[in-house]
Amino acid sequence: MLENRKILLCVSGGIAVYKAVALVSKLSQAGASVKVIMTESAQQFVQPLTFQVMSRNDVYTDTFDEKDSSVIAHIDLADWADLIIVAPGTANVIGKLANGIGDDMVTTTLLAATAPIWIAPAMNVHMYDHPAVKRNIQQLHEDGIRFIEPSEGFLACGYVGKGRLEEPEKITELVKNYFTREHKLNGKKVVVTAGPTRERIDPVRFLTNFSSGKMGYAMAEAAAEMGAETILISGPVSLPVPSGVTRIQVESAEDMLKAVEAHFDTANYVVKTAAVADYRPQTIANQKVKKQEGGSTIELERTVDILKHLGQQKKNQVLIGFAAETNDVCKYAKEKLIRKNADYIIANDVSEAQAGFESDTNRVTVFGKNNFEQAFDMMPKQQLARQLFEMITDKEESYDS
Ligand code: PMT
Image (tube, rainbow, N blue to C red; front, side):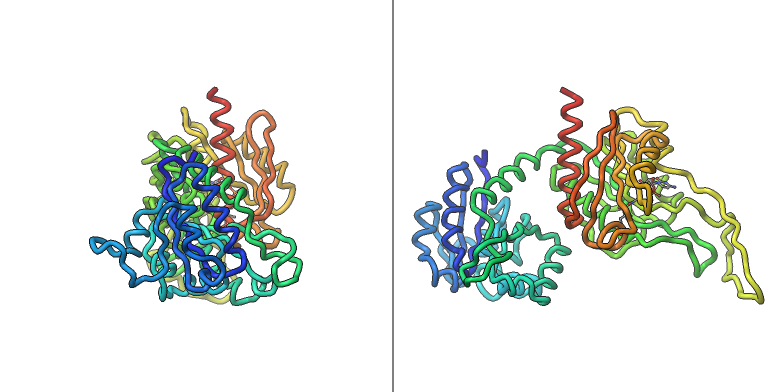
């Protein structure tokens, strides 16, 4: 299943290094070509020779030990890999990467990498819970690095809790799923909208909402990872463009409508994650409106409901809307599915802590045709986005067959 896949395993120093040996074996058995880099502390637990035998490749331990004079090893390895896994990922390596430190073969390679990086942490339960470690993990999430959560159980230090390196079989399974899924949107065009819109009142004021763009950017990133040509139509947010994604920046609902329309005919999937203003000021003052005694009223008019408008025109496009609700989530989401002629509505209860606007995590329920309904647990938005696309592409395949 992993034939022709090149996996670079970065091993940092913890007792779980022995499990990394099993991981190399599992990945190799599945057909992957595996190369290994070890930190100095990893070598305290297991000899490089063990990894060399298991991988049938040289093991790299020192940035300055150039085995091939025609290349620079850490750049060459970073370019070689289709996927990089750090397992076990210690608090030290996580901290260095989160802060851009490259002081050994593992960290310089990680900094030079453009391939996806997955970190499988393993450490003492209190270390994993330390605010600094949490901060670094959070930073790496934001940098687009994926984490394979440690499992709970007996730890080598004697504690029981979260911190065990995920089992090699499970990591291999995730890798297989990743490479299978990677192709699912090959040849497809996905248009994602994200962020808020701004509806101007005058040159210095506007109406907007709390959307940070995180959910929409995660959807775009997942689509690109799965091989889609991905167009991200984004309201004003301060997030970096995910790799492989083309971003079009817009301001108002009107701008967003025009940008979406320009790509709609050629799109296979349209994902409307943006929180589009439903109303805008009837007129925009050319000059700053001066304050006066007493109250003031702004006359508002409706913006075009982009999702509904697309729903009226759609041919073969799969139309996915989001619904931000604070009550009767299921009722309103189902009503939007029908009224806007969408294929799926992904509903989030934005009154829930750590869900909806601005948070890094979200909890959603997806509604679709024929009373389809599937709830997803609370999880990081990037992970959720991948699971949503996996579920939707599977479902669409089942309709086609
Ligand atoms: O950006 P984050 O901080 O990560 O927050 C994520 C989110 C909460 C914004 C996101 O998960 C979400 O729920 N997005 C939809 C927000 C919204 O506008 O919901 P709605 O129920 O008002 O609209 C329903 C659907 O119609 C949405 O797909 C919306 O994009 C679309 N719509 C709404 C109004 C309009 N004029 N045009 C539209 O296309």
